[in-house]
Length: 427
Ligand SMILES: NC(=O)c1ccc[n+]([C@@H]2O[C@H](COP(=O)([O-])OP(=O)(O)OC[C@H]3O[C@@H](n4cnc5c(N)ncnc54)[C@H](OP(=O)(O)O)[C@@H]3O)[C@@H](O)[C@H]2O)c1
Image 1 (cartoon, rainbow, N blue to C red):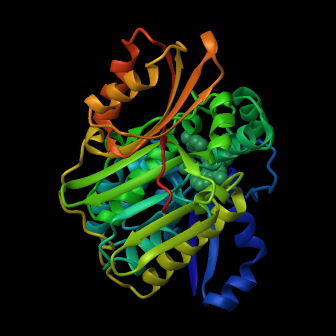
Image 2: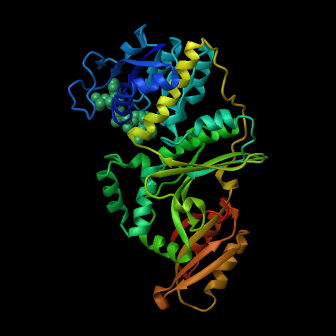
Image 3: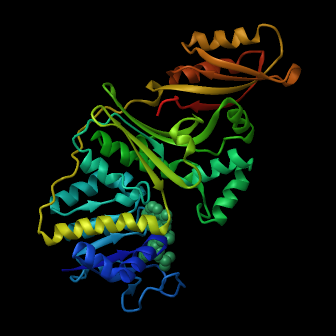
């Protein structure tokens, strides 16, 4: 049975998908019974040299042609960005065509609206590749685990920053050097801001938290810190203390509401996420019935991402051929979003202090005033160069911040040189 496919975008993922659909067509038919025929691919430049050339009879620089073409049953959006991708996806859904997209930015920003339009039109909007590249995570969350009351999502969802942090901590590279290397290997964009600022991870966290908790979490509600201010000296201290830095995506549901955040954290070396190296991704899903599940694998790259896109295409094609009225996968109910200050966190704090008697008691007393207790403390060096490293117990984020602000006003504290959150030992 033939299904006409239109692909918006023929870049890293679009190119890999097209190549696979053309070269492996017989194998796909044998395995699924579906003949997926690419009828048009829209790109910006018709003259660009491509790793896998797009046949002239299907290439176009007019993406709207795909929407209007009656021979195209299903639209795959692999252009990226909010516009014109958003408008094209909306128009395809409006025209009653199922849409498959890998665009986390678009899904995080307009997912609720797009899903609603898809439901109204009785077609699917599928976005497995938007989070975790080749790792199946959206479908398990929205189908296999749809009945579970998921309480926590914890993971590494940005391969670029994971690569940079791995190189910085294992091979002593500086931040700029590690970014340049990631760019040379194709892991980081020419402008790496979306990755290093945590924006890409925040979009993925918004999607994961929304599906996990059934409450739409907009990307603006995700607390976000990037990895730009992580200094090599803290990575060396962290290694001595038995930790490695990771950019973590964390979503939690408690009786008082849902929270979602992205920030660097020191992870104990024996934590399962500590061994997720280089450009890999890993996500823990936790629920009272199922316990803990770990999804791990390549979080990006043309091949892995195209595999996830293809899975969605096959799913949507089956629904089309069955003339199935697509049931909503997850319904989103209103829920309370917790303020970041209400979250409990542990902190690593590096202080430059005067090497005078009573400094430690003064520092501990200041934390204590805000209800923060200290788990462990180390002193490095003596005299003018004394450095104090502290790890606190769990306390309200707002209190940790207030305590650190109060430390700044102590005469004996020359500088609060660094603060990094610390992930608990257990996954
Ligand atoms: N790359 C990955 O590893 C990965 C992983 C997971 C998800 N994703 C997501 O997948 C999507 C595609 O990523 P990618 O890496 O494949 O991007 P890409 O290599 O930059 O490719 C984008 C494609 O879209 C075309 N395009 C862009 N704007 C257009 C416009 N206005 N009109 C017509 N065509 C336009 C480009 O045309 P030209 O070729 O002519 O420039 C190009 O073919 C993004 O949403 C991304 O976030 C990517």
